Length: 155
Image (tube, rainbow, N blue to C red; front, side, top):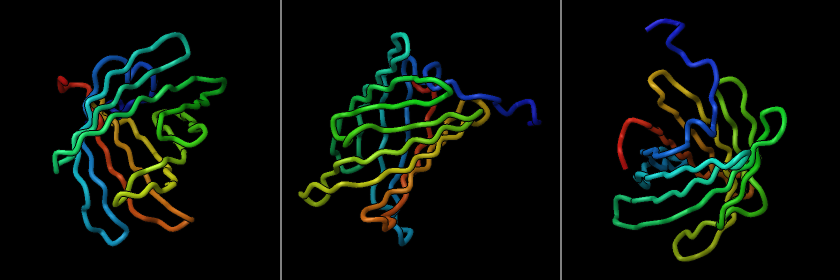
């Protein structure tokens, strides 16, 4: 592998158009792995709008669905909504990196909690997209979500 194998730019709409698989885990602030999951994603693009239909499959058999609607603005700025996202998510793309910040309402132990996500995505060689999200509540780090996206695996 050499320098030319590294991607120069992430085109979010192009990357997520069609089928994408993701593999992830949630690690608490003490380093304990709390959840493992996969996500089957179907993306459709219409002009400056990307719709992502996400089906989460957790190791304990739990299923979860989320639909994101992401809009591309000027100067590589993005915004988006989903059913459990409070307000709008705000994103910025720079070269092969994408940052994404939002507040989400999550069910934890049967109660709804407002949680802050600070996502950083990095496009790697071979069309692998890595995501690291710091998860906080009241400014206190709860843990980190790690996700690897792949375009080569069929849903």
